[in-house]
Amino acid sequence: MKIYVTRHGQTDYNKKRMMQGRSDIPLNEVGIAQATARRKTLGDIKFDAVYSSPLIRAVKTAQIIGNVSEEEIIKDERIIEANFGKYELMNYYATGVPMMLYWSFPELFKAPKGVETIQEMIDRTSSFLKELEQKDYENVLVACHGGIIRPIRGYLENKKSGIIWRPRPKNCEIFVYECIDGKHRLVEDIQ
Image (cartoon, rainbow, N blue to C red):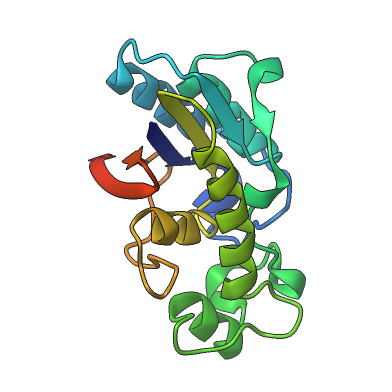
């Protein structure tokens, strides 16, 4: 099985450098163009299944890159963006020291109160991926978010920490993994 993992296209809140978290914000024109360009890059690849976070920015990205209707997308809460609590919709640089340190270096700093922890993100994405690995797909697309893609990549790249935090994934960057008999390897990074 090949698993194509992508971050959604740009939104107006991305452009304004806001912590959008679980706010349900649509793609902007740039985001739609990014997803369309990625679809063209993939050529005639057909996905046996297309999974997405339930948030509209990820769903629209999945629809475009997956070349499927919205009704064909399998929406899964386990790959929704991290819960940023009271920091939701704040500018990245206005969140204060505790949140900035946590979101920059989660391996060193704890999540501020009310913010989803790295372990919580690892637990829910691992559950999703273990279930996905049991499917009989040749190619599958997973459209999600900049925060939650980090534990997904950590799982698929077998990182002891459970995350790959840096560099931050770009909008519509696609990480392609080959999964055979429970073993994974990154085969391509499409930017």
